[in-house]
Image (cartoon, rainbow, N blue to C red):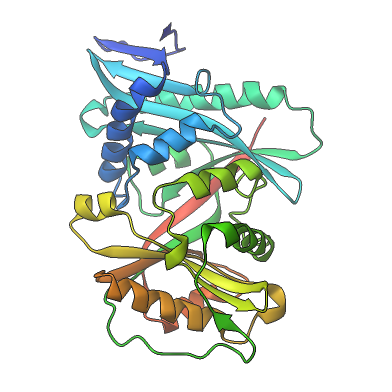
Length: 333
């Protein structure tokens, strides 16, 4: 159904509409990935990612909270809004406007940006909560088309994230786990224990939200086709999880970027076992497994100010910074 958008530029063939169901997803996927490529984001979404996001929506209604932008008869842009709850008493209202490069004409992305802020203010007005409310977006640190909009919109940098890469899987050291701790395979039946341990260990991570670690997110993870519990490196003390490293390979992403990369995240250690070499030993084991599976590099993301000293550990393990992302916020008036 067509939508009327305030102050939209008068460009011939430009139209806006609502999301019309799963049949829109392939076109949305193409727009998002081409937009991120144009903005220099070297990662990609898959159709499975979108099916999970739109099929099991968390704090957004696809029928109301997605703006579809068409130019002629082709989808060229997608803007979506969500909200998320932080445990410290902060509610964040997030948005991102994806627009393919050939449609980056004067005013289109700004129109999407403004629509998202108006829609989020409508949503927030219906939330009766004592929590502070802020708008949040993510951008690359380097200036690009999207970051220019964010800066002009009055957002201020809140926290930073590095994407890091180990450019090869050679010379991986071997570290021992503490006495009484063993590495053993994880089955899907045991994965709930791993999830609960991760949730507790990452409670102080700045990316933590109630939704990210809620029951629906757990269901989405165990149903996702990229989940391979057998590849995860999890340390146990008797029947208790000590820590772990997630291991994931996206064949679609590797084909798209002509690389052989595996991801080693999240990395977590439960509090009683920290500062005892658990993360180092598990990460080394994960890197060796990726090498044995034919991968040639590994990657992960880390908060630049991670309180556990993770950034220092990853550098010691051969990871280097390749991209910096910023989460920027402003008060929701």
